[in-house]
Image (tube, rainbow, N blue to C red; front, side, top):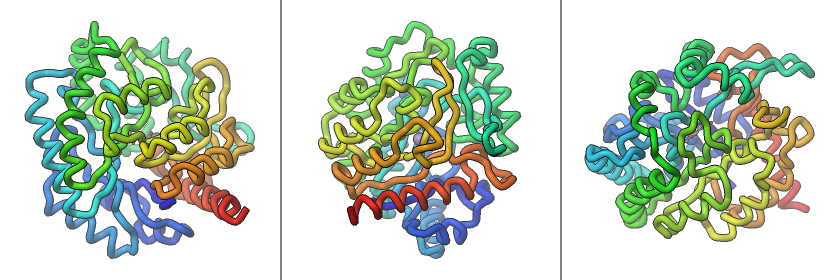
Length: 355
Ligand code: CS2
Ligand code: MN
């Protein structure tokens, strides 16, 4: 297991790399260049990032995310040009030491929450929160406005302004698209990129829909084990893998997260893991919790044990944390609670190894 940390680059992340390095057991980053979906990432800028990360004593073997342009998901004629850029980016990243690329294939929205800083009554910290009831009242445009306003001035992953400017138009373009239609477009993409990944030694890792059910009537095809089985069959290759995010899949209590890890781990189809806990509050209603099992509803020991038993060499990062100790930062991506999460997960790992 390689413990890693999501980091947004020195221009946009308030957390200095030396702080990341000081978290015990931290080996590297899940990092990125801040580029809009569809762009061919410039090699000089990426090399500079790699040097910066290496100078801090950390690795950069995982990229999160290279976002998939909406035209690819929509299957528009313009997709070929965007796929060509994606392929060029894959090759460039491989030349510079990258082993895994995390991405998602969710229409329009990445993760979705109805409150980015819901106070947790038990201890006064706050965390990301979702209640479908609130969503019904808001509608897509309103939720986007509220999310942008409450993000403390940070851009949020998947909520980049240029992507959301076209929101109304994009929502219209998806009208009538079924899950099978989206899967067909997904297959077209995978058929183009996976052979390149095989050639250059990179694995693509698809992040689940978050929350793990359809929203706003949009087709969503990556939130159950059965759906992931289909994704894997779209282009069957060791390079076509899952980024198994416990908090995303686990937002639906019907998903047995440790069993899902074992299922894909045994197939060698886990490219990376996001590990965090959730607290269920009702139907389609949850908040994010501290990583510790007893503070939420996921069994973190069973999760780490499943990783240990079936994919022990994978990359792990503590996914979102709460905001604690009055930290001001990007919602979900503060330093303190994610550092606590990493320490706790490393502790579970040590106990599993020695037990
Ligand atoms: C992340 C996702 O912050 C998060 O919830 O786990 O944004 C994830 O990085 C993307 O969906 C992957 O493309
Ligand atoms: Mn995640």
